[in-house]
Image (cartoon, rainbow, N blue to C red; front, top):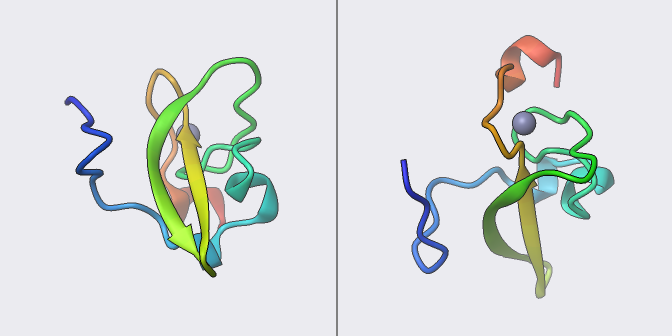
Length: 69
Ligand SMILES: [Zn+2]
């Protein structure tokens, strides 16, 4: 599964993400802390500001519905 930055896949709704996820500290998909690793999920605009969303480098092991978000 390759990700094209110019044509990102379906991205999470930034408004629903926690600030740590919006800032790329936590995974935007599963909410786990990324630490030094992680990869760009995509870039979105929210309230006129660009946000770069990050996700787990090796893929997420947990799904949001199972993580209680
Ligand atoms: Zn994740």
